[in-house]
Image 1 (spheres, chains in turn brown, green):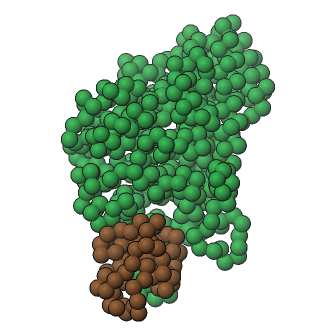
Image 2: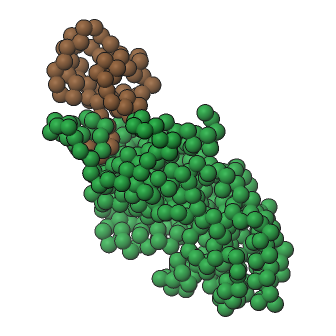
Image 3: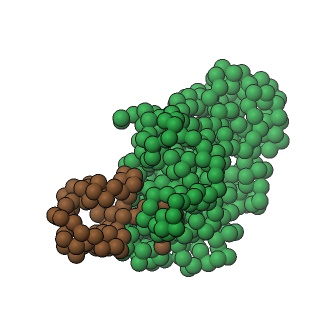
Length: 69
Length: 411
């Protein structure tokens, strides 16, 4: 299954939820990360019930000062 | 962990400290290095949780922000160099030229000056209303109104608005309700419960541990839909609830440079841990002093919302169940009497601040409000005969004794 994470193409074996994706991707400080799925923010409470599917675009973002406003 | 103090003491670090330090260390470094150009790029794009430059973010400041977030259950927190920086950053982030703010003339003198002297020439308008009458606000709201701005307890008038009623007005009109909670910071006031969207406050006072350092906070409760704000609605389509924090961190806060220093963030993190203890003591001292002053024939018009005689006592008990703050005011017969009384004090200090551990006294008309005409000061509820007492955490007997001996000059 092909998806994009932070603009880069990646392969996933199965559909997985956001929590699993954060673990698999070894995202730093998962408590502080915000996740956009296809341009829309996912509530942290919905990480476990939101699944990433074929052609999805996922962005991991931190609001520490970097990034475009 | 449910208790305010427990949560403020045992906040979890975002990253484990390499030495398992029990107190989060002071990272007194302007800049932070990276292993590769790719990593710097990721940090600048907001894809890596790394600090780059302390004007924008810093580990010690971030830890302080996380502590505040933990005790307030808020959506986002930005720590700044002062309470005035918090107000300035917020207004500049959410309002445009031609917009207006609704507030009251019963404002902290520097906030009034910021609105009138700094913002008005840039085209931002301010409308003054009686915020204790929420029903009067609807009539002056227009399509350029961006904020209803209040102080939870006005300083030094000690007026208290019905914040839930103001929140209903703000919700109905889809505008932001901003509360300056300096006099009643978290622990004394739960802003979420009363429908406040954004808190701004001077952490210089209670939070710093009793005036150890200057600082400010913007606390975003995450309750406002930023699609309703003309300036931020395009950002809101992409950033949703993160809109304000992103606007601040990636533009306004970054560009204005009013960052909190790491050392001050460390002091304020420590201060937060004892906030509830100090607030309990100073609030009980204030009530005791107010009750004592009320019985003295030399003292006129003792004003403290915690007093049963205050017209704000009922609303104060509802909004500030842990205490009505540590500010009281009273009047004497003349400005000369005020000065004589102030000069006679031996324990209480002559200084401009509040929620210091020390009790401080001030004549507002000749200090914070000295730049305004007598007529305007009267409109602002600051007469020449008014004295403000910001009560600290000393032993109450010593404060009563000091006031008692000082009153001799009034006889």
